[in-house]
Length: 290
Image (tube, rainbow, N blue to C red; front, side, top):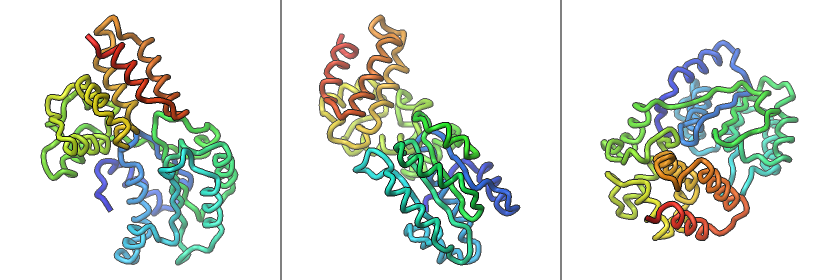
């Protein structure tokens, strides 16, 4: 299991609450995608089950085969978390516990629950059951139903600048963070985003030290990386946000109205699987041309 950076204060509080048997059993971890929420959940359940037989329990957790842990996340080939996954969770919940220990259910990508899945989950967590720990994970920027949020105790996780730098440098075993152009670093960029971005730059032999966001988007359009690379495709909204973050109010071409126009258009293209190429041709013509 990867090392957990940051979140030490909340993690130690969770451990103390668990030891005193007063930890809420319906927890919502929220924060930007890529800030370690899933890793935090994995480390915490690892702590719960590893006290007595650390090596054996660790192996089971690492292999996703621990009998007291059930995980749900959006599958790559699906648009939503489906109700069949919630039904499997309910079956797991109704089975006997291994070693008479608490069961843990981790639901990642909570924002991808569809209506049927949400309703089924609500019915389940409304039932009082102190022998099951629910850890729900929501990536901020996408809403979840208030009915679901209100039934959980929410903890917001975030990382400080020094922690983000430490995670990135530790991943590459080198001081990489200071080489990344400042135009790719702001509130919207998480450690995992920066790690995948550097790996993309290296794979495509892109010099990223002094790279501007405009140069990057032009290259992205020219080489159609938005069609060829999954990481680029999944984070187009961040690259567009970085562009406007830098350039808004610098030119008469750029206004909040134009910004919202392209945000909405990209959202609709993603939602309905429309033509990305036409979107970027328009973006280039209206915003990147001299």
